Length: 406
Figure 1 (cartoon, helix red, strand yellow):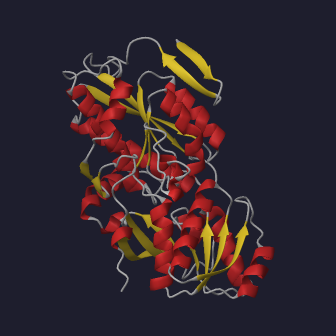
Figure 2 (cartoon, rainbow, N blue to C red):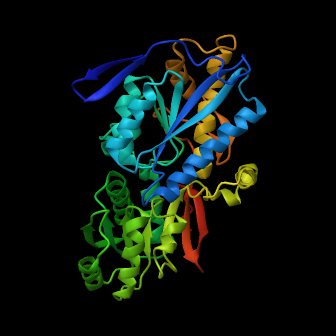
Figure 3 (cartoon, rainbow, N blue to C red):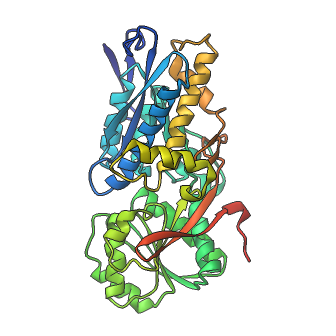
């Protein structure tokens, strides 16, 4: 049975699950089942990224169960499709919060969806950890730009660094490595795209670059004739796009068809194999993504081999490694909570898992996994990629605070 109470100020629901935790669901009469929820777009235009997230979380859970990572506990993944829509993400969080066996949620992909999930997560003491969200507001509050950083949601964590880091990296890379002096900046008006574009502009101009024009488009737009005309008249060295690949792919192709021959650059929302499929003239375009490419990390060799052996039909895409680490962080938190309670989960397991998450640290697929006082990853590595002969190729990786200006 569920007891539902409405928080009138926010419209969010607090759900209190009644009854005992999921005992003996494994069938052998000895194990407790812990459910880890997952929220990501597994259908629709962003499903390539969402399916990679789902599969990578499943792999982490399968490995934990196979090796008996947490004695006496079997993990189960409950994956829900948010369709990249904030209201659906909120509904999914509410549904998962109503299941007493759910001790955490991995996801979502989109920062705008995360904003709709955070309050429900907080009200239910339910850990929410994203492998992909990059908007700084989610962890540090809306006044972070004024250096008034406040952690409003203690249940929220992420294994992806923020756009304060990524956008600044992009601005510096464009100015110092690509030697761009002028840029035209376009965003899709969504939380992620606006924040990324803003951080890019701040860093690019700080270093002496000039923004020759800005434009706002809809993430659903596919006809960019008017934008192409405006960009062409300004003759920029670079076009920067804050948004995701379903729109940026067609935008890039139409820019080049219209005579704008300079590269289009974006962030991790552009870094997908589907961007190249959508854009016959993607050659030379750039995108950044959080972390180093897993293919270049010795720490990721087992993940890559295991993913291949598991036979998933879809690629792990940009967030496979960070998703595995996010899921494993939850597993480690559950492990610590059980260890602190003589091998069993306490009645307030959700609250204890949140506490344990703040202290989680391990060597993961993407490197050292740990969280700062805001719930942000301590790993600030960013990589710049360029499309070359039909594939993304890594060009430069650095922790932004250690960016080599040479």
